Amino acid sequence: MEKSKVFFTDMHATSEANLLQKLERLMRRTGFEKIDFKNKFVAVKLHFGEPGNLAYLRANYAGVVCNYIKRLGGKPFVTDCNTLYVGGRKNGIDHLDSAYKNGYNPFSTGVHTIIADGIKGTEERLVPVENGEYVKEAKIGSAIMDADIIISLNHFKGHELTGFGGALKNLGMGCGSRAGKMEMHSAGKPHVDMNLCIGCGKCQKICAHDAPVITSGKASIAHNKCVGCGRCIGVCPKDAVLAAFDEANDVLNCKIAEYTKAVVQGRPSFHINLVIDVAPYCDCHAENDIAIVPDVGMFASFDPVALDMACADAVNRQPTVSGSVLEKHGHKHGDHFTDVSPETNWISALQHGQKIGLGTMEYELIEM
Image 1 (spheres, helix red, strand yellow):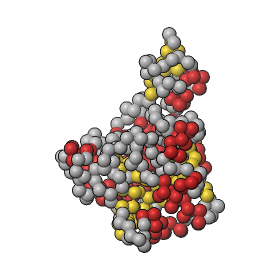
Image 2 (cartoon, helix red, strand yellow):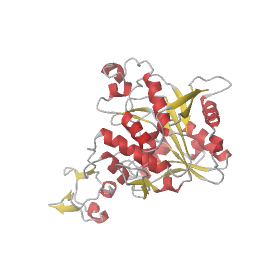
Image 3 (cartoon, one colour):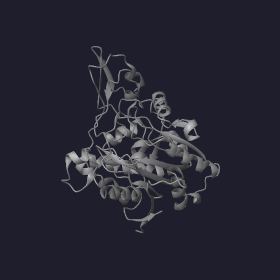
Image 4 (spheres, helix red, strand yellow):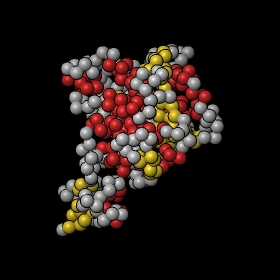
């Protein structure tokens, strides 16, 4: 397979070129303008950041991407799907509040913010996965599937389950509806925390398969009837219904690759990784630890697999930040991400992505 081109620029700025200008120059250098944006709906997929976390990407970067697309005649919007876990982005209303507070509003980005899977995380499309081994039909947020073009703007950092989060994590896991996220994270079915349940019956009312049962004022879920749609999680007023989160990390990575394939197949896509504030864990945390390595730069490519591979290699070439989790854990594995989260195996997502035709791990790095 021919090597994919990955373009790179560092984080040095001058009076002639600030970081936002360098980002646009990077995009132009890749051939970004070859995409036909004229009157096309463009989903700019990113992570708005969990409230309390300060490592997420500043909305200024999204503003550059969206304004560039508008100048090329496109109709961009920034978007993400609701979370499976309990937090500030669990439903569409709270998610919008969190996005606006973190700067993802029309004043900063110049475009509208859309929660792709709706108020309760149930607005989804079933998308067949070409060459899928673990997933036959991915459950993707409807607004993302309504878009003509997909642009991913990704904060590249560590992750406690997948090793790192980059383009594949942002696209695969991030574009999944609540049921999609459950399918990726869980081999089992949801369960009820009896200490939180008040027996209100809302889970019963929303279930089309009669899986929730109320006994002695508490709900339980009959797994022989449950299909894992996740609607009960979204509707519970006490956050008492919980996902299993029991999928093996390697299988999780493979499912993420297949969901990414579902998102990008059949339409133009382009991907940007900002390797800055490389926190050890996901931006879904309501806090962030200090970075494990110094800031590296901005990377862009039409190939998300090659892009993530180039960024992983770049991070592993960096020195360790003093006092970070990486320094405390040491370097037993010879890989920064594995040293931080030893139970992970980040390469499995890229290997599977290459196997199913999502992209290639072989890349040519072109520096600006």
